[in-house]
Length: 345
Image (cartoon, rainbow, N blue to C red; front, side, top):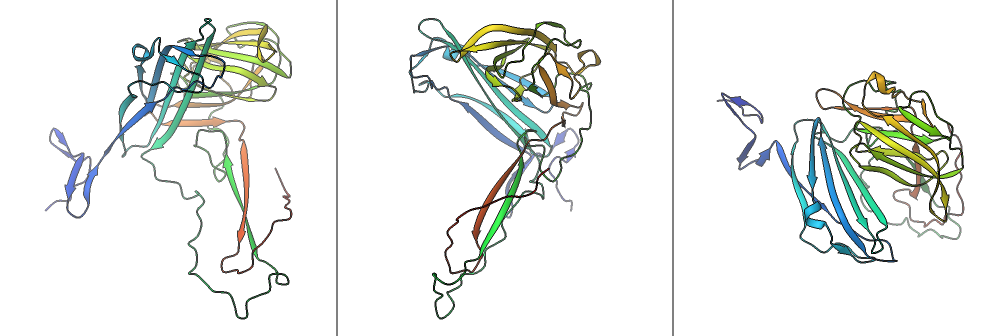
């Protein structure tokens, strides 16, 4: 007899699925379906769609799906969503290999008066990896208990509460937790190819020597920043306050950056424009904590030859969430009158 394991090879064949009465269906692969929806949150007019493109990264593989032919010239009314056949695509996920998966969607449209507008969305997840042991979980609750006899007087009996603290890391795309915040493996992105993501902080400042092209200076507390990749993917286009983080995905060879004033909530006069090389090579000088004009690079995720992603972050943005609950078995309700937190970094 011989034990059968998924992915065992038998000559030119490989076992990827088996079914038996005890274990049921077991497979190496999961068929995932991604569905896109387009909404118009602007109340002032219709949105006439111009293009819709989606990218899928699975480890080292890259795939682009273009839905433009299905959406071009379709109209989305204010507050409504696109009413058309489902915009979906399928992907096969190998559950036996740890893989970082990322889906990006880029949609462009115009108003009836030909004003340009756009939208982006991103989702990412790690497959083939069990939850790490540091994911917080509640202990099982005790069996139900009754009130002690005689029943306590809730006007005179002290209540018993149990506070809790949950720590999460906001940046890092889910690759960091409060139990494993470590120094970056690399200070510079030189692994070749494109980084999976880049994160900058708007600090303000003039041109720097590590830029391909640059002119002007930006140091206002609030500016409008537009960032477009060489493939014309819109990576950022919004009002940005000083010391705000810009998490950019859909990176390719380079990106153009325009920083402008804000006038009545819209783009004003150009303050600074530059081109940043964004390939992971020595010539790009993608070094953590270095300034690129008015922007400071604080994070990049590179991918090795096996398709595994490595996060390198100079800053960890930590979010602390507090909760409080009654001690198990207590019979006295509690009213929270105040709370305070001490300590820090």
